Image (cartoon, rainbow over all chains, first blue to last red; front, side, top):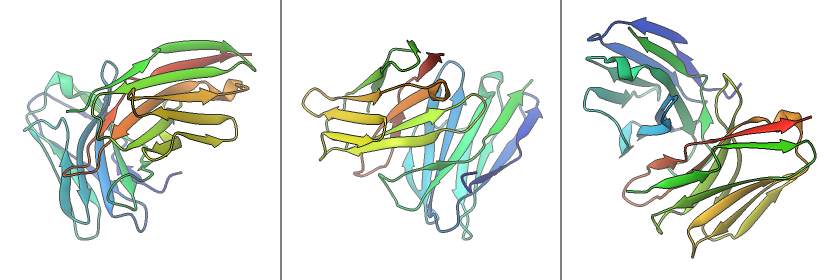
Length: 113
Length: 113
């Protein structure tokens, strides 16, 4: 157990819908990263927050957004869902802003039907 | 942006043999290179990392080498064991104005008892 929690574990929804994925970092970690893992594309970095502020953006679609709250938990919002958005979404946390070990949560498996 | 290539995509070795996985990166400013192990259905876990001011790092049966001139880094696993079977991902990170992580496409390692 890494100490990072993600909810829900599984999510099944329909195209066009909107979902919110939640992540709670390890106690004391200020950085939260979001990743998308699909079978054909490996791990894709989406976005990073550090102490409530956005720090880096990767391959995150405009339909996706995220935020980190004062209690440091983070939410990833996915809207206008498409079949191709079906994937495993991981969050990871780190105590430092960059270049440090990231601890991954168990992931949320999203299935868009 | 950064481009990380990882080879091979699959690797089978006999128990006790060594395994080597190679990654190349394109951005010479990248300065942090972690390796993650992901067992089937589980979260990625950091197994070793190296920074650009170091050429080699070792942790028991695992070692990583970095060649900054050639822009490649490699994971070496010696005396492989069946529990080493997993997917291994390399990543490159550059901390400057952003903190994006770029992952390789993964290597599925099978250790045959």
